[in-house]
Length: 258
Length: 72
Image (cartoon, rainbow over all chains, first blue to last red; front, side):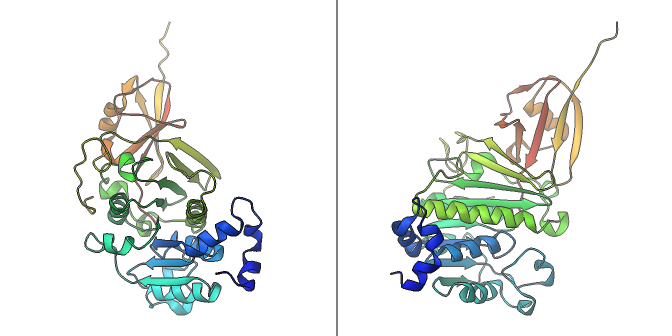
């Protein structure tokens, strides 16, 4: 139920015909899981909490480090050394007490992915490693949950929304992970803080649209952001009949194989 | 009369931006082989379209090869 305060808080989006009171109620009932409380997860969590998503799960096993603060805007200097999930819950709790924050201070793994993801409606992939990105893609397929994928490196970011069995999945695009030298982590290759800011906000945008049923999800289109050129592009992508997960002869029977 | 030869340009934006010039026409799978990149882990893009390994890229084309990225 929305009280008078929340009606006022959400007034600017409730006035949008695509959302309205019914959409706001959907948001209040929605359960969204963000995996990764880092560069992507921070803006995604802020905007989903701001939008009034009723239950926001935050999964991350790491603690806050000083070098995170350049882009991971959920965390403040005094939080250094604390678990990221606790830091995120404290920040978001102050930001919007009407949102229930569920902390998952663990690494999402093949052993726990299905159990953690099952109680959510939508999963936001804000993870910082390919193993987790493949795992989330697979788990969402088996659980039939929409996945909002995001990834960033240096000055570049990408976004893809996956509606299992309807739009291409991450493995349709990348059936196998590249060798490590082709896909170094941000701590090696670097990342400009605004890039996950942009992509994380777009991930929240996708999740809100999915909850209220507005617009078109970024399915079948890989959105690419080049921060140096200040340019967005989209590449048309199709389901891959040879996809090892959702193709015609799948070989992956459970989540977790890279 | 000298023959004008044009090479295709292959941009690899990540993890470090590199531009390669290759003699064409060439199939995508052969381009990736020449660059030492696994076809299952990269996207090959021309304009707004994804190119499959069997597509032949003309010698004056500009294409992009993007590996899966992991940063979050």
